Image (cartoon, rainbow, N blue to C red):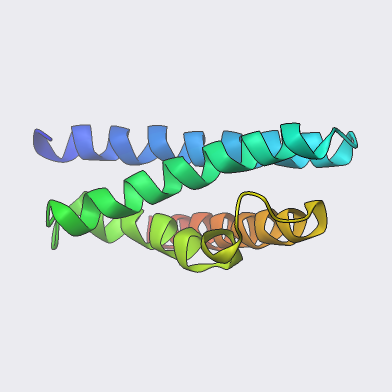
Length: 116
């Protein structure tokens, strides 16, 4: 990552991706879609968050803007019920995990807005 601008762009872009993936699962749940479709979307959300979480622990971005700003989001979601819920879980468990991930996202956004 070159410079703080690129790091800010990365944070904004990937936070939007996380939000879109959460919203996608929420819409499928609200529409009463088949559990296999819900599980597939949930698996995609989990995979993205896990990849982002692992990136920051392997590449050691400690002390950078991207680590200080974005890492709390992916770590919070990864360590929430979303990280603990298996992809073949019941729809009810997936719904609870996604709700908790949404709460982490909203809390992260509020904290980010307070810092600005």
